[in-house]
Image 1 (cartoon, one colour):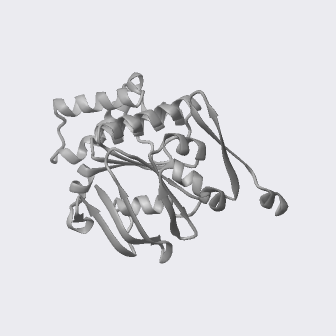
Image 2 (cartoon, one colour):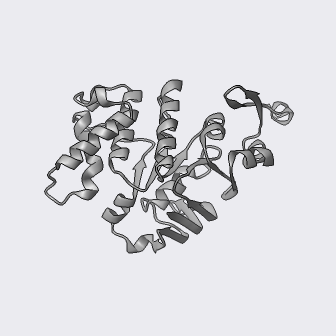
Length: 260
């Protein structure tokens, strides 16, 4: 399990979040929520060692991150970034990049690597794209390919930064279904989302970030009931019960109307 203890993060000498203590338990889908620029992506990158911390601890199964090699970290946590380069290779070759942490140099793929890539493509709903050049794909198709690459890494924890970007509603739900399946298998899944309704409906835990601090951590029911989302986003988050469960929606508050 990855744990953050009193973590302070930022970049370019600027502090973005202070004194964040947060764990990402196996078997749970944790969603990071907060206004644009509040530090969600920065926190995720720092937890992965991609950005230097300004203070605090990052523990991987009780071991300090600094004591692990880059390869050891990559075998424990995969990362689906918000923006990525588009290489001139086929989808299958791209997804096989997720197997790099398990290969020595020069890299020679084994039967188990091809099998893991094929399984990941199936999970991401991209098996039919395997022989297509990545550059020829639409934004939504490429998003599924990068998800498959992260899945092929086969780690205990999966971090995804806005994984539903470029995807239509059906494929957004498919991404969340994959997240649920991974959690049910005992993996820790951590996502940055901007869709409050999707997060409240699909997550096990929500971590609300704003004004440089971690405001609240809890179940969707606890966070919704506490009203922290209303305060952080300046909207009224409400819900109605439907046959398939709670349907969450947002509306303007009187205060936000008065400030226009």
